[in-house]
Length: 269
Image 1 (tube, rainbow, N blue to C red):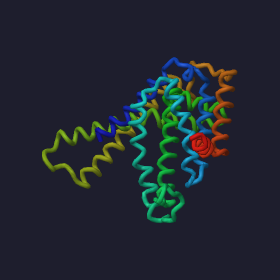
Image 2 (image 1 turned 30 degrees about the vertical axis):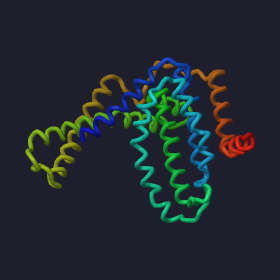
Image 3 (image 1 turned 90 degrees about the vertical axis):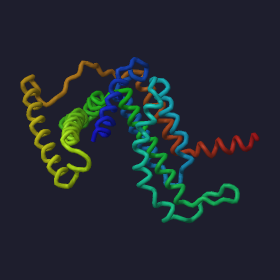
Image 4 (image 1 turned 180 degrees about the vertical axis):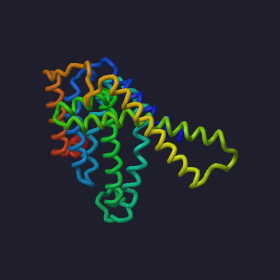
C-alpha cells in the first residue's frame, strides 16, 4: 500500500511541471488537447502489422519533451509502469499467429511477434502523449479545455474530483496499512478476514472524509463549477500548432514515411 501511495503521489510532479513558462506551456490548453487527440486517433488506427508506420510518431513526444523542458528520465519511469499491462495484452499473439509476415535475411518473423511489438509501441506512444499533455498543461486546465470544447460540465467536474481525491483515498489507505503493520508482529494480522475488515474501515473513513470535504466546499460557496484565473486565448500560434501537427500525423498515417526513407537511404548507399 505504501509503495502504491508513493507512486500515485509522485504523479503530483506532473502538475508541478505544468507550472513551467516555456512556449509549449503558454499555448492554449485546447490546442494541446486537440493535437493529442488527433495523435492518439492516428496511432490507434494503425494496423496490427504496421510497425514501421508508428516510428515517425515518436517525433511528437520527443519534440514536446525537449521544448517543454520535461525530465525525460521521470517520464520514462512513468511509462515503464504501463508497459507490463501492454505486454499482458499481447503476450499470446506469438502463439496464436505463427505465419511469417516479415523476413530479415533468412530469419522469418511471425505476425504474432509483429503485432505484439505493435501493441507495446502504441501503448508507449499513447501513454507518453497523455503524460506530456498533463505535464505541459495540468489536469485542471485540461478539464476546463474539454468543458469549453463541448464536454458536459458534470462530467468534467467528476473527472477533476476523481483526479484530486484519488490522492486522498490513497493517503487514507496508507494510514490504515501503517496502522496494521504497527499492531502486528511477524506473520500475524495477514488474512482474508483482516484485509476484509481493513477495506470496510477504509470505506467508512473515506465516506466520512468525503462528507467533510463536501460540507467545506458548500461553506465556501461551491455551486458545481470550478473557476480558474487563467484566460483562454486561441490565437495564431495555437492555430499553427494544431494545423501543423495534425497535418504531420495524417501524413504519417496515410503515407509510408518509414518505407520511403528506407528506400531512399538504400538507393543512396
